[in-house]
Image (cartoon, rainbow, N blue to C red; front, side):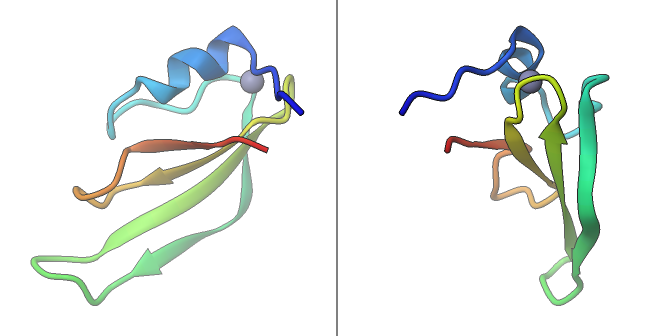
Length: 72
Ligand SMILES: [Zn+2]
């Protein structure tokens, strides 16, 4: 089953760690804080688009993509 995503979500995938969530992305659950990693911790926040239902995780970890799209 293919999941169509809206153009805003297509653009969101390309954003950097400093990129803001687009206007239809809503936070899902609480931010997850990972304090243990050196030199400092990082945070993850889940989002879901209210237009196309695409799910993203935004991470501040330098080793991760800033915006990860979860394809259903
Ligand atoms: Zn979308």
